[in-house]
Image (cartoon, rainbow, N blue to C red; front, top):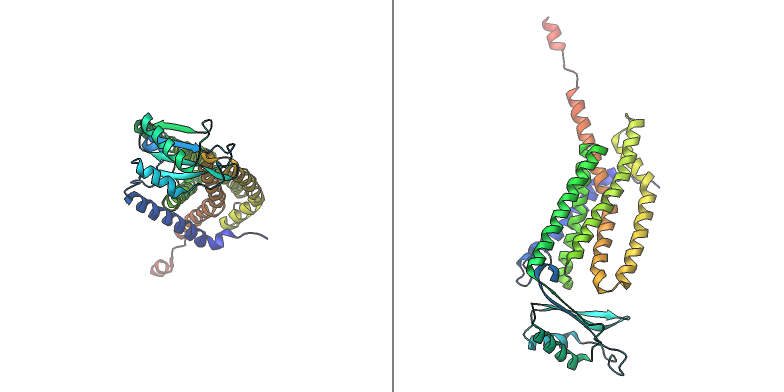
Length: 328
């Protein structure tokens, strides 16, 4: 079975446009939320503050018999003047025996009081598993600027590389496909931030940079096959060339993507709280990268080349000279 992706390219573009639009709407809504005030729900790395993770000591008899009531945790935080903190349960050995709290900057006394109050409410904590991190807002802004600059530099580098290796139109549509993947990943995390309270941190920027590398790699493979076929059969319609190139590389793209997704799924399920959002971003981005290489970058190149060919044909149409001949 062979795919004829160019026959339904309007459908592929509409699907992508709908997903991107949903993400943009979510980012606008997120920006208007008084407790977020940004397109994505920012994590501790960007806004500064204190992150506290407390895990119960299950070696003590009866300490982990009852599940943690997150509402009870919120009540304790509210009583400590931290009602606006982000609170999540943390899985430990397959059970939610820990709690993760992101709040404003806390002094040592405030941290101690909070820990003691939580311990009285939900159980004794294991001091070896407790984590307390503090990040200043200045460092957060610097991380954000550095991440955005790294993305811009990578886009410029990819554009230059694709232009020298192929042609300018190849490079432009490869960047369009990259922007497609980035926008969908960012939009998905904006929606998750509103619905599930998922925050983005410095690892999210790393994930976006990784996605750009993976996505352009798939696009280069398809573009290579297109260029080779054009050299061999320059008279063949560009739509047929692109469809053949996609079908020739389809098995490789599917196998590569599935192999990576299996690894990322394992990290998402068993990698712990720190790597969960990072792996989720990669899962979304890599899936969209495979999709955009086949259904976006390739079909846009076909549309552009067909448009250019039609303009050439129009310019070469013979001029009606019958009137001038009769006059002569």
